[in-house]
Length: 353
Image (tube, rainbow, N blue to C red; front, top):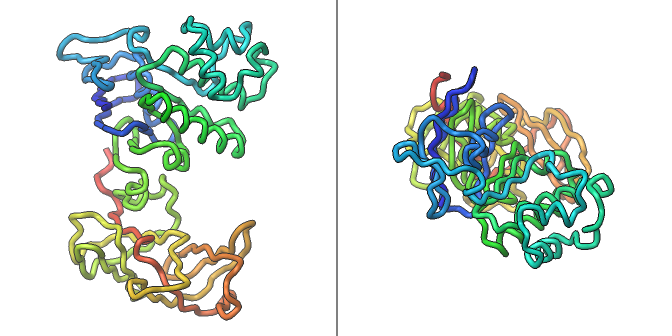
């Protein structure tokens, strides 16, 4: 259980964050300057809120109404900084042992993260990926009640990231430690966490299961932040329990399975068609659409096709595409879209402050 209610007035910035989650791994997702790291600092005790409450599992870290503010050393927080913050004059062993004093625990986390072979080296003698593992080992060594990670993968190569994602997942499962991850990479959110808190300008805009949030952004701005690339204006024609039908400006009808619960007929909305929405073995649920191929080009693992449906629609096709399926610039093509990969949302959920 993680409860965070934080209000803090800073020079030129107001932090007002509120969320509750039962998930074992929570992510704070937002662009830079949105208050993610400040929220993490409040959980760690490095920033004292003006008012609110912070509770991790059964321990209250902060409660302004009861006058409770535990200092960082009493919270047993494992904090992994973006720059790792390793002591340069200490060996790997000494860095992990610092603040722990339990040799058996140190050996356990070194083995778990496969860095026991470099325990006698200094930080300047190891790679960036190894430094990241050492920092994680140090955070885990003193058996923290919660693990806080402040964009720890941002400076690493993709192949290193993938390996560390796997290691981190193993560690969290083995030690059963709640985790809060700060990131601006939604791939990390999907791979590592069970619950996402999307922030904007110091406030929470949307929360929930990462996959569901990705398919159901509350507005166009959040959709862009999550990586949606195709936006088509339309009007809601009908709404049923499992689908909504929307008419585009060019007259095409699209059916979507991802839409707000309070969506009403006649509303002006935005449609997002995900790149992998195209179907090659359509069922009766799939929607047939005709559009002109505006552009086509190859990437390393797919064919990218841009179709004209009033606005550009970007779709990904496999290289193994049937030779009977002809894609040429300027050619009109009939294709099928999966309603499960189409989202409907409003242009803006709330007015700008």
